[in-house]
Length: 213
Image 1 (spheres, rainbow, N blue to C red):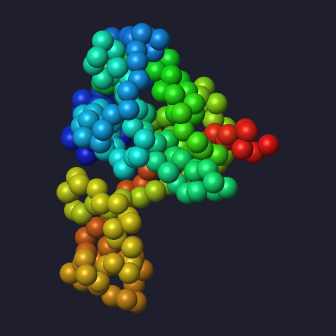
Image 2 (image 1 turned 45 degrees about the vertical axis):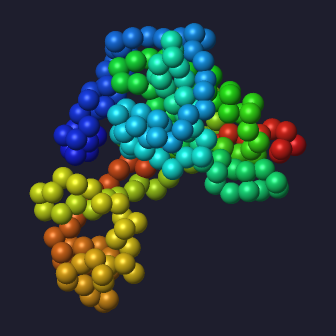
Image 3 (image 1 turned 60 degrees about the vertical axis):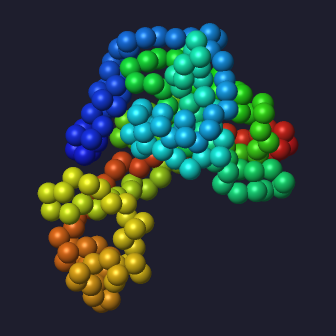
């Protein structure tokens, strides 16, 4: 975990650690739950409260409810259209803090594949705290390891800034000191920024067998 995650989202980090130890306050079975398609406001609030990465930009938002209370969500977004059917990304799977939903992920995923047209679904598992086993259980196949990603931080500031916002062609309007002769990284060092890296991702793919026949 990054230091800012421990400080800013400690309750989420602690829940992740406890789940690795198989320690939960409540265990619920997916067969006892029902699925509803939820709106963006409900989805984003749930993600901000229960997922390290917070809200997303998904188009399909599935909620798993137990006794009319939201306990888990799974979200998807379209990547592109191929052969008349879209390729999707499974963007988030998230469970309420300190709860285990046995069979919850498979129930949500089955709902998606039974109700949406797709030819391929891609998803990513962060290697900092996941081994990707959930996606194997859902029927995904491992594709490859993604290249480690990086963020910038400045001096003792714990806030992290994604590299996309600091690509070289954007730096002349963002930095006090900028030289076109320097690389992106050297320009950032000149302005008292440095990089922090993650561990990359497992990349998994689920194909529609009927589409690929």
